[in-house]
Length: 599
Image 1 (cartoon, rainbow, N blue to C red):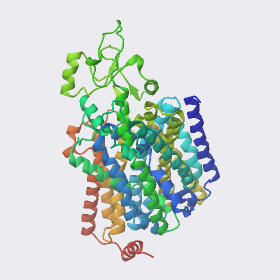
Image 2 (cartoon, one colour; image 1 turned 180 degrees about the vertical axis):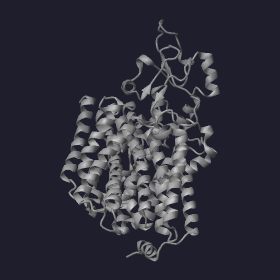
Image 3 (cartoon, helix red, strand yellow; image 1 turned 45 degrees about the horizontal axis):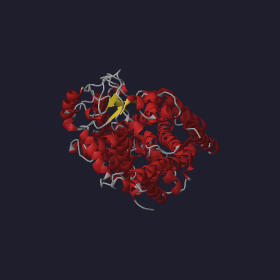
Image 4 (cartoon, helix red, strand yellow; image 1 turned 90 degrees about the horizontal axis):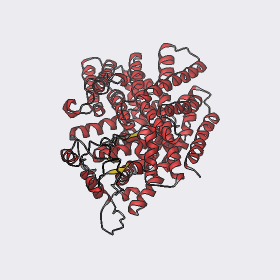
């Protein structure tokens, strides 16, 4: 069957499944809308949690990061998985025992303050909206390629799909939809990885294939990583296995992603959907198992996708064309491609605008190398190259393009299309629910309109979700970076504001409401200001102060890593102010002991 037809059929079938589940599991009460009636089985909740957490950043963008950054991208692997361990051990069981609907509700009750609850809502909305921008970016990338529409139209289509099943189903519908999405995305991620590992190394497990010997026609013994390192070095780039950035930034980025993961409201809320504390612990364990399948595969997908990209760009001898300057393969960099003979996958991604070339010296060849490397600059002057001509390779295309580059069967490419879209939609739905519940349950019901009816609260939640979809869609069309980079900013915001408040709320009887409020605001604002300096105000182009210049970073700390510094500010101010002021009342301290004490 022709590829595009197959993609339409597979992706269309998954959409029908999502919409059918939303209709069949439509939420009819606030309990079902917010926490699925607290009746989800731990195994099912673990699978839904994995899908909720493994977003477009995990499926689409993380392997692209690994492909282009290599070793330093391990911060994303360690941070996101390590953070989930923190969440499972330190937060999830205690918050489930508290037994309410939302994270701001816990903060408001624990710190005996409506102001604290409102501040928590603000922190939640800012972090969640930033996070959902990355998901919409992923949706746009996937749709723009596989449905052959432009990026903006892809985002609009994704908004419509999320609207149907998230607004109708609430948490109940989202949970069962995410179970289906997990099955789709994990097959879509691992199946092509197995195919490509077998192609390159003959090893079926990608985790082992990354460190295995390449299958070569010459019979020489060469390891995949050694060959990849050598090719990148020939192009003037840092080697794949080389540590490139500062150690302190790598450490702080890992820490920021870890505590940001543990502070994400849309993941925490999933543990409110199970019947009891024991089920919360069990579902956390199952989620770790399901998450590990993708995260142990990601390094292989990133390394092999970069290897295949470079292999596609290898110089080939072509007949001289009198209309252009003749260039022998000896005068080409290690990665060069005859423009007229570029493969079909290359042409397809060019049409999306996410891959672009510029034949600067009009020789009919696409030269790919590091034009900022002095050695490559010298070669460019000798051979007449005018600069790197592969002027744009969006990192978010690597996973989606990899099966096409490797010439895998059409059904595998269609499966990857469905998986990439499922990953982005699953997390977007969870984030939108967290935003809508914060607005309808914490602001309206819990603060400004306590006498609102359950039906009115439910409708307010749906309206809030519609508004969040519109805002997220607009910002997703104008993102401040690739999906994983945007998501890292969201994790930093959660790390600096929500995580410290939850940790102190559970494990410290001494922290009072004044300390918690000042800590959250200081952590959030310090991180926002730092991001503003390099990313701009609400991601409006031209409003950044330092334009993401690494030389201007404070102590070499990137905006994505600053969340750990914001968390330190939060903890410090909260403890200092609390110990200078009055301790919480006895009933609050008793409540804290009750949360921590096993039944």
